[in-house]
Length: 510
Figure (cartoon, rainbow, N blue to C red):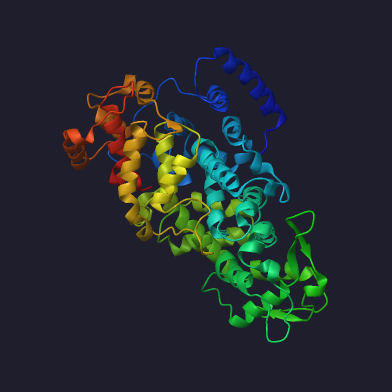
């Protein structure tokens, strides 16, 4: 999102202060952001045996907490924080915007973005995504951006998608992530990236033995709206594909402009999901098709079920899915009321109401939450992307339209890489990313216990360690091979204690 006038004025004032200090080798954008951030003077460590409600909330709405955020939620209350996150537009996010607005490609038009090399476009899209996840105070909004990014998955590996996905992220996903589902679905259908990824740009009226290209039509029904069990037939897929003929990407001087070619469109009558679309509507076939799809009874249930699984757990109560779906329908398919219904439920707020409430963090969430927990300064760059590639979860790289899975099974093989990442992060072994563990620990000095390892675990986990966890940490800390210090200036035990907390089984879940 571009900076507004007020943020630019603030940026200018901060620039003078940061440049005047002139005693750091950190990038200027980093210094400016840090000076604008509201940093706590002290924090109160969790001391209960169970994860406290504020910690659970921050884990579910976003990627955990940075120092001081637990205290903020405790002070304002659960309800107030949820409402604040739902009204994300009112949250001042200037420091994050400064970090994320330095990439030229992010605001490029579909035509201009081809002036940049593929590697630059891919790197900056990743950095922008990572920095928003780590530093944004609009954590619920960023979670919804990632949810829809997977829902409308587009892989950078196909054709011009490496360039067009940046435009899709800016013009499709981010503006509509908490808006109206109909607007989001239409924007996605006409996204240059989606037209390339699912071959919509080549979809034209049948000629001879060749029918229209069904790729996008099938995923529209199966993945984007009704769901695999939504009650559509192969005939519905074929008829939907006919509705979508004629849409393409202009390859002339303005590269990337979406255009409708009437000479390639099937103008005959269609019948989709039991409803007739009359002949002769031309490009309006798209809107009629999407309206039928959105208002089909399966669509609210499918979207509501996915969001319930995202926020509640793998087996959300059926009655919650129905309530969320009804909120979706009653609001004319607005996303925010449906999310509010889910976040107000007992299943979301009380772990005892949903037996499958704990989920394994996917690697991206794990990395972002680890960076937040240690209050890291990061450029969000190639080194982090390399770590996520090793864990199998580099954003925008899943090859098939269903997007990266939420289920734990595919991610269990990444645990060793997570442990190694925790060690490297805590010991400042990742170029482009720095942590000041001594500075973090000073925040809870007034609340510290006689057990520094227990304090780090409480800070990272949102609760006191259980006896078996404390014993495991004690045994690991006693092993000299596990405690190499990489020259950090803080107490030499801190990197090991922080790394063990991040690598613990409890931190892998949310």
